[in-house]
Image (cartoon, rainbow, N blue to C red; front, side, top):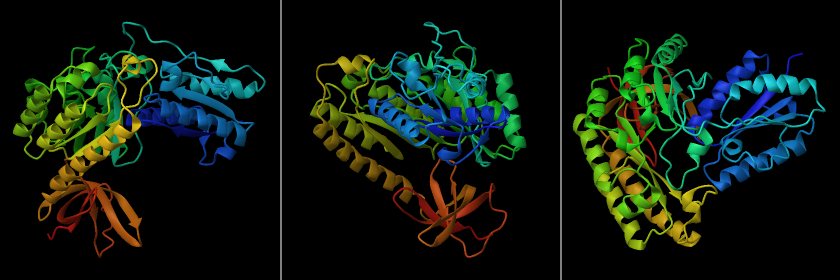
Length: 440
């Protein structure tokens, strides 16, 4: 008997890549995906544990699914059960963490055949000092234009606010031989761009004696792949040799998401980040020297315990000085199980909200500067599809530096999907540029 499943994903792009791998595994085991939870025999929740709020949402989803679909098999996986295996998961029939998720289809088949069986708690802990191999799950997305390929897992950094090392284990990397096969398969499926992702992507190869530049070179070596893009990076791995090697790859997109978290050295130290603001700026300067058109984006946490008004003012000044193309702003949220959660000098919610709003103003100014610089220029855009908004139809894609572009044309322009075209930028909006196909 064939069974159906529905998969719900919380959290980051790495979690989304994991869900894609799990989706393929379920299908390989004879499960058919359905869009309607009420039609599914098996409901899978891939959880996040970065904040207490993300766990609350996953728990709430499980309760809702149990109430609405009482006869379905409920599977909980992801960072929540891995980081907090002793939590209560009263609504789940199968509990699996981030390790050995490839067992989920097998466990689901067994459990569906024994509906009265007790819940299966199958969370396997990571080795304290690492040493595990890279997960064998297929990790590529399936949007046919851009493929998100997870090549690195785990983190060794132990930032004081972060639960990820407990939820994902230590750093481990996809072997280059397997990466070559994955890149070839993506090319054969018609993908034009590969986005390399990981929990701590810059640490790719730490366990194998290789580097991220090696991974980029492998993907760029496929003729049908026209772009290679990087996910989030830690600045301390971007040394001069790494930047030089990345610059040698013509297919590498000049988009660098370098996690900052704070522009104040005192706060960075309490966060247990491994760089200073000056060192971070030196990295961005080095990148811009060899990638003059690079877009640098970042994450910043506001209201970290002990952050004074002057500390935050330093971050504002620093963000403005760097000129980020985009800033993702996160008010600090205490996470049980992390060092920072026990710090005595927690910041009030109202202060965090005020600081987030102030940083948002800086982010908006920086984004406008980045987008406005495109007006009047002609840039290559990889077309990802046609969209409809407010009765207007347009194509949509991204420039090499990751800027979203909406392309309006009077013609149907058949065959544009999955192709790179030159676009003349005429204006910009809050989060994108707007243009038309350049005259030939």
